[in-house]
View (cartoon, rainbow over the protein chains, first blue to last red):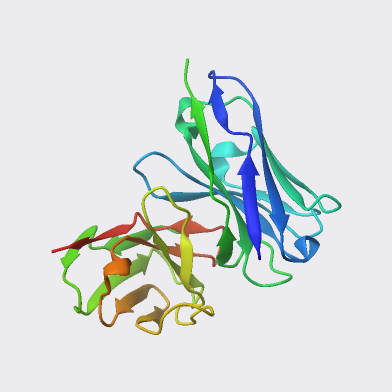
Length: 123
Length: 106
């Protein structure tokens, strides 16, 4: 079964850091681009960051550039999101999501999603 | 940035109804559009990709159409399990999503 399982969320103070992980199973992880998508409470979905299958190309939405870093370890079938200088507006459920087509990086639909992990930035 | 606007924001309908949700892009996105269904506390589920293609396992009562800047999601005969929030996503550039349409029971 194709599955994504996020972990690492929690409560952090403004200016703090957190690292999210997403463990993948059931597919050839290194063949697919991956993304992080977040959803603030009661709001719509927002794409945050994407990474190619090899990890050689990364992409970010403007509001997180310079603060968040996406990476992957294909030997461990795991996707990461390092979040630094966190702000209240980063509070959201963070989902990892698999790109639909093999070889695509970020310009594609997301066919598999994790269950999400909640990040709360508050003092 | 490409902005996605969905209408309506809320839709009340009954089991068996045919419903249509519209998504408009701020610039042409060709057919690079997907639709998702999301239930409270759950992750989104892919319903349509490339504007009109159904992934395996998605019921045929769901259909998508459109290209360029205007797209529609149609549910031909609403089932009890279909009451949820529906969101569109463009992937012509960096992805962006519509604000969502909540489909409620009338």
